[in-house]
Image 1 (tube, one colour):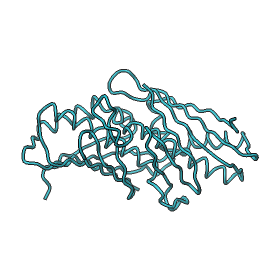
Image 2: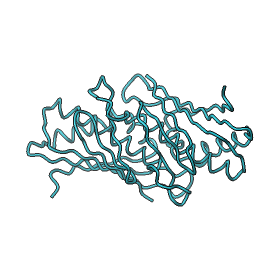
Image 3: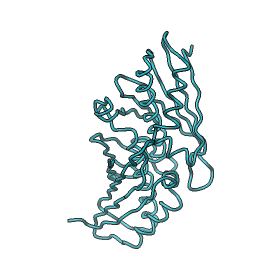
Image 4: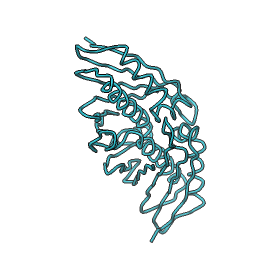
Length: 139
Length: 139
């Protein structure tokens, strides 16, 4: 199976990106001439990871018959100082709310995703340490 | 410097993602219960690479005083068959149109980006072979 994306330069530092029939903009940081017409492209790596592992966890928890009300992932990473600037550590918060949550099932799903199924994690963890935390029913 | 993204599960396999104040959806492939409410998350790795190296090339070519009319990147990659499914080779077409194009400057900019400046390339090329082609004034 193949994936394809197209990016057309628009003006300044911004590009219009097409992926799977959906169109969005990306733009550089202010300090590099960006005008915030879209997100920074590098951060899309973290969004990609959030979506990939989030979908795995949804799919696995359904198979394990666990129900939830809300599910949010927060993914944060620091950039290295030297060029090329890469993410050296990536931290993920898996945040669930609901009254039928099962921490054991959630933990098992996350481990299966990050260590076995999620290709994005498998690619990014060759340069970054990926760690996670489970947060249930935050106040 | 840190980057942060948040993904909220909406329904089925779709998530709403926030990055740098911009909001977009991601969704799974049909065969995994997706409804095409947004692009597949893994493909965002390729969009990230397109934006990152595209911005480098724009910035470098401006310093080299080269002008162009249009600039498009096409990024394509095949997934491995086994889990976790990763990109094993990534091919980029850098497509320019204009009457003042300079292949030498374009080539130099691309090499500087892919080998030195672009952090996304530096992360992805630990699992994938990244190759490119330059296409000038396609018919």
